[in-house]
Image (cartoon, rainbow, N blue to C red; front, side, top):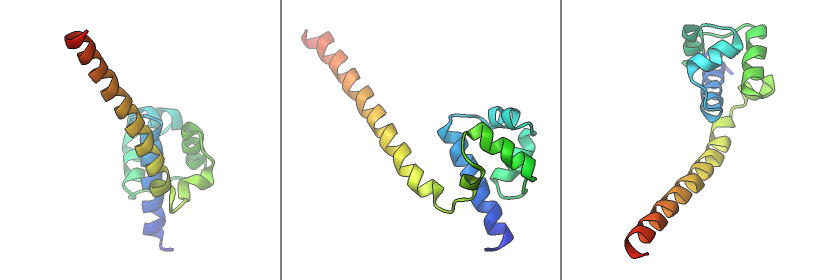
Length: 106
């Protein structure tokens, strides 16, 4: 594995895990004790953090450090997030339709 590929995997995983936790870059940067700019550069694959920063990021994201480097984290977890969103959206739509039905038919 090339260095740039490792940086890219790390950045994508951190970004995905940040979205999954519903953190803004500012939220995660604060929790990890780094600047927003540095976090942004990590997520874009431009910078590689030191070990202490990796530990802080993992702790803030509530994952083990090794999970930040999994090559398949985004595709596997992405399906779970989509399914979760789909159920939430489905529930919202059904609730809205029920309210409309009650308002106009009840």
